[in-house]
Length: 436
Ligand SMILES: CC(C)(COP(=O)(O)OP(=O)(O)OC[C@H]1O[C@@H](n2cnc3c(N)ncnc32)[C@H](O)[C@@H]1OP(=O)(O)O)[C@@H](O)C(=O)NCCC(=O)NCCS
Image 1 (cartoon, protein in one colour):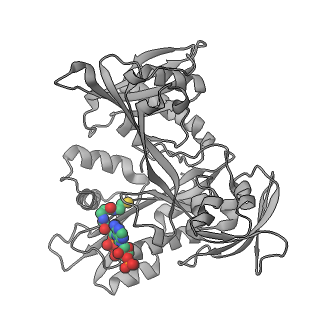
Image 2: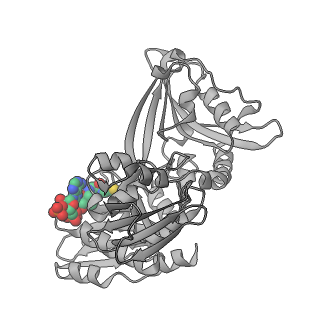
Image 3: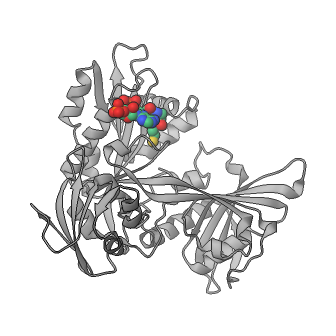
């Protein structure tokens, strides 16, 4: 943990957050990292909020052991019956987000947001979110991020979909492979070996893809079924790609669901391909698309611009659907914009509005090899001005949407959308390869 992450983890709750809830007869509190019982009850509330069943003993144990990195808040109602089970939950932690150009900024990640059906639509989430964003800002996080259960929740807090994910359903028998034939070899490995290889590979490649973040604790064990509470871990199959020089350059994990009426029509669900090189990517995908007895291959959290599309000769053998996936929220405009890279030298002015009063202001962005951002009172004459909300700025930060599109949608105002688009363009399509 960095010292910023540490400070955030143990920071006191925002005064306004506690006072607002207190005035409604509710008590907000951090769940202590050592408070096992409190953490279990908090987990009960999270499971209920996401429509799950009661956690098992293994889930309690694993979750307590692995989720210490999370700053956990519970909101308690003393007038209720199960007064130790929070009526609302919220978790956050410091991580790193990759920006265009391969730099990373500290990010406040948010998760486990639930409000009990008995307490919904009374402003509890709003109070928690505003308070936690204030704390994140006061400590210096330039940006916040989350993945969402539904789209309509977080725009009001300034979050916007900044990375789109695609889900693929491929009929491998309807297409031939026209991608490279990788020179290395594929071998089955254990789930533990897969987890270890994926951990190393992801850490090596995350800075090459805008939108990825450092993997939070426990995620790889979940992916590879190597934690005691993993479900259907025995169904997982793991392969690695090794280069001719003997380097492990990629791993893939998948499971098979048989079709009882037609054994040759089984479905392979690919939970993850982590490829450190283009050869590993081609080698692993070719392997996955040529599995015997498999009539359908499914994969999700792929990017909107996957090389795989160019490796199959029948594009219509793949049914691709897209979904808003990684939501970002700029908190500090100068710090965030100065951290990404720009492929053109230009100067533009941005007039940013923010309903929460966090990121608003007028800024002059000098794009180029060493970008700079100045806070100004008035936009200077002679440079294009963009008027936009913090949501729109967050949406275009990684290059997922062009300002030309946002202008046509009436979401940003500018006289020269094409020039602004050239400034914000990014050459690598953003991706976030998991949920958090
Ligand atoms: C989403 C959830 C946390 C909202 O909590 P809440 O305390 O009811 O939210 P608030 O009362 O603060 O709502 C604030 C505003 O957001 C709106 N809103 C809340 N949830 C919404 C939703 N799911 N879709 C659309 N709008 C929503 C409210 O209508 C309200 O609008 P207003 O300010 O115009 O009146 C809660 O409904 C929940 O737990 N849902 C199930 C779990 C879940 O999906 N969590 C989110 C995980 S990413």
